Length: 235
Image (cartoon, rainbow, N blue to C red; front, side, top):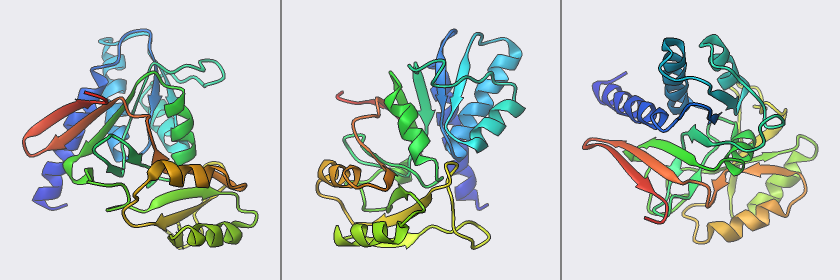
């Protein structure tokens, strides 16, 4: 890790830990997936272990987050038991000025969106490099599709103007989500109308989820050279 990367990671960790300050006793908390969310889970585990924070239960958005939370002694629950989540802490791959997001780089987009939609408050933590003038400028849109007929979905996505790449695992094998689905990374370039694109994706049978997270973020914590800034949607 270079010195710049080390500083960026340190800032991101600080921002994620700041997000944990919003958790109050008795809350149901959505636990996001990825390196940024992991910082928050570790901080939550430390506070619970010390007794500084009590009566909090988490809902993990992936098997990886679940394993981390269990290892730290964070009590877990499910959306079936607690269908309303008080707040969720998660990261993002790209953030537009209106706080719309592209998420799914870690492959947990379906569960992350389910939990986000069930949350009263969605706190997103990013470093300043994730900020973008328009979604799609920096990151492709992950689309999670059924393995059955996935190549037909790739053709459909190409018809919408995307350059489609089937995601591979680290060992070079096809990547599968926790649900056993395939992820197609779709480079649309800068997206002029994310809501219209989202509607087209949601109308397609076989598309289980997409990485456009619109009108879900309530708070954005940005770690940058000047420190940590906090933005609230609509403010």
